[in-house]
Amino acid sequence: MILAVRPLSRLAAKKAGAATGASPTTIVRLISVGTDLTSSPAAWQRSRPWHLTDADGSNLASDNAVSMTDLFRGRKVAVFGVPAPFTGTCTNAHVPGYKALADEFGRRGVDEVVCYSVTDPYAHHNWAEAMGVDKNKISFMADVDGSWAKENELDRDYAGASLGVRSSRFSMMVEDGVVKSFNADVEDAEGDAAVLLGQA
Image (cartoon, rainbow, N blue to C red; front, side):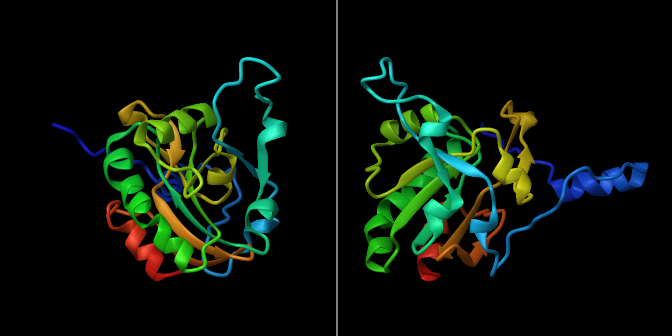
């Protein structure tokens, strides 16, 4: 039997803190329609294999960082966030929906479809490879330390499933850096791609 583990949201955590007199130590920056993502200093990492030699490529974070401006400015980008690579719902429901509709996103004028997760870029790369995803159609990007998720209050505690702090499941359509649609805490992972496609 596979159990669904629901994370404790940051909102719930803050309510608990208020009840005990604790004060929040983070600045809340919720994403909503109209949010300009290019104002964030955060960067994501493109998924990649571990390079054994410098001739194969660089493993340095600085060489593989993708800023919010580079990713979103002057482009139409569909992003879907998953809690973790190699996990049940993410592997069997969420990514397959986007894999099936990847060409449709292109026909709707979407420049890039991005699978985002709080993880390392090497696990993200191998997960994509294991699923047979064409990374020319879906890019896999990692928020290694979860800083972008925390900045936007999308971090969730999945300690109950031995995953630690990860990202919530979400999707968004971004045009020229500005969020045009945002689907928070997605419950229907299988149908999420069709929903976001309708918002393209």
